[in-house]
Length: 138
Image (cartoon, rainbow, N blue to C red; front, side, top):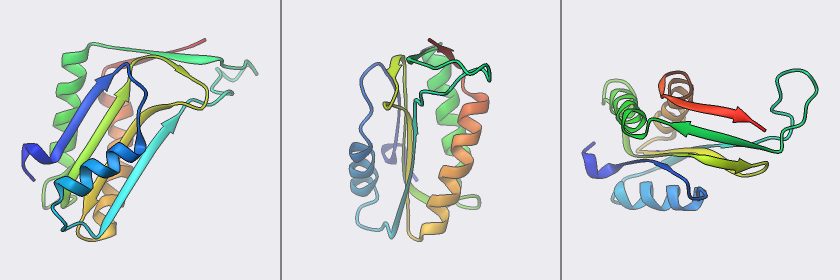
């Protein structure tokens, strides 16, 4: 997979799941047989376990460090011997994210569905654990 098949960004703009599918479809050049996506959405009961209701989340990041780490994770996972995907789209929202709005989208296309599904599953876990993005509940 070459660099033109990877689209990674941190943005203050609302995320668009259909744009992620459009990107990986186009970037895979008609070779995709499966596309898998994960969309993380702010939920009202995010909470600290104290029964408090969340109105919105605020995400902050060291943008250049976070994008570098996102790219590192994506390229490592997309290695042919690991998860042979054709294209990847990974966007994380910054700033205020209201209940019901997407905070992260990860979409991958592959020749067969299993590679895309496995890639997305592993990618969300690693991105949440390793990318320097901080969340505040309000």
